[in-house]
Length: 480
Image 1 (tube, rainbow, N blue to C red):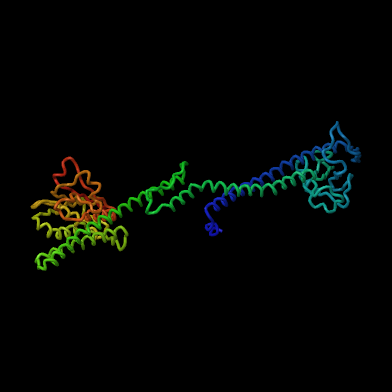
Image 2 (cartoon, rainbow, N blue to C red):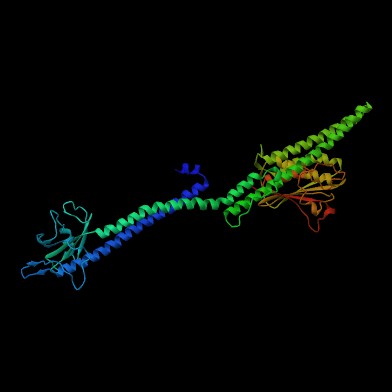
């Protein structure tokens, strides 16, 4: 059943659910109404039958030797008896069970009495029961009769009992009418519920349909368009807002990829143009320039580095084969990276100072050793690149109880406040027109690796640390 419902449309499922809840509630209410009315009619019928029995008992004369005189029933003070004359079956019975007198066509039908008389002996003023098995009763007026057993001579110790059975025609007619109303009314109500459920579910899901239609029309050529926001502040509105927020992210990502492709094309085109120009010069002059191959290899190395960095960024974005997380000691990774960077620093006579501040025991972090090496190498290399000759690059490792902090400070031109927001974007450079070589991918890679490790990489700027004093990068990693 559940599998079948899952195959239905949301509109149909909502309608089925609505009809199921409404129909169940209606059926239960109809059953409650039927049985409540049955009890109410039964009580009214028994009250009328009791009054009838009292009236009949007043018409019976009991002699000194319990001889009975049972004259025809008559109107008492203008009140007519509530049951049709001649349809009631009346008899007086002795406590021994002997029938003393009868009125009506009983045929072979006999009234039960033992359980009824026992209840009266225990203090009840009368006893009632419904007689359904009346096959022996000739000319029955109804499908069932209601029987009352009533003490005739004494309340405390009766010896004579009046028993009256009357047809339940009126009672049955009223219940049959209610059954008829329920039998025809309930299907009609359920049909109305189905039509109403389909209509209102369609109205309720119309905003969703509009969102679907609008989303189907949005493609790469019109990413600026958004799905309509419903007026009502409900879950559908939140769905539309979430959809638009997703479209905002897709649009920004798409635009970023477009800029990335454009910048990558430009960065790749520059060394290719240089390489092509040098080859053409060599072809025209037919001279062997000893520096030609060195220059050509340098441009090939530049191309390889761009492609390698772009491939790493693509792998991080896609999450393919990355990362291989283990528990690591950051100081060991930094020492290895600094030793590699020393070769670059020697060319500019730059000294790399490494310091460890132990505010807690040596912690470990959770990460990928190769990726973290790449992160630290890019930041330190960037500091060496932008620092002047014979400057210093400070690398400080701070061990704290909950996190490990790495600060890398250079003595370069610093980073302007208006460039801090974009410095970690791909192909973004502090001074593109300067003499410092680079492609603007190192910091973008570092940012991606930090995000992948749930770490934070920031640029520290304050009143005492301004652009003329260089740049300071801070990396915070959570300890294991």
